[in-house]
Image (cartoon, rainbow, N blue to C red; front, top):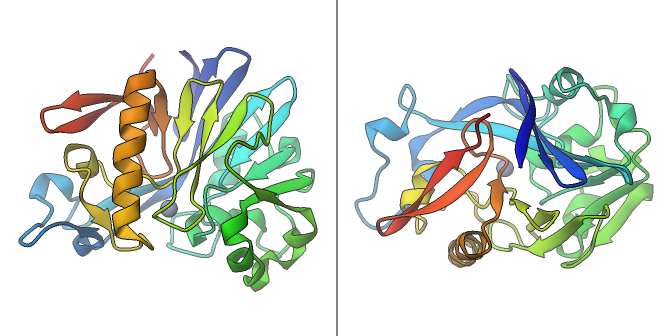
Length: 262
Ligand SMILES: [Zn+2]
């Protein structure tokens, strides 16, 4: 792995025949009680910025000779102010919406699917003829009126599917029923919302208010942390601290995250 390009809102790493680019959709904050721990748990002052939990929102672009795949699409204009900057990050990284051939969602929450449509309600990635959504979440996706223009392009996604050669879908349920991670070149796991705040590395038992099944989210996190460590995978996530790509290490009873650098 090597870092081949870095801008203010993007970072590109090269992995064999593919590159993976982190695209920052924007930064927001959440109230501290979004993190849920055992009796008496509360995030410490070092976990907060001005009394709130920092929450960056990221998407990832995978590019190779066989095409260009976008994993998640950011919040568009549908959620917090300051988000919806994916297009600008894409331009900064030297690409554009026309170049995206395939989109795959880790799950169908608002900060991951909303960027599929532009401000006028049209297709934000007009050349993406396949939009992969986990089978378990197709109903939720179809129920979202803003997604009507996307429906003809919808493709059900199952564990083991490869939306792009060199990319494999890996089940990671809990945060949402069909939550998916994507293993790129057998070396980098783009894990969506497995982690929402860096505190969850030291304390992986801590869950997130919007985990639909907190117990399953916790056990999936433990299992994928162990798999990533055992396999030596790099990891990337939608809400990880800058630059959203790094290495996991065991650290006492928990883990720590080490961002990639040049
Ligand atoms: Zn999210």
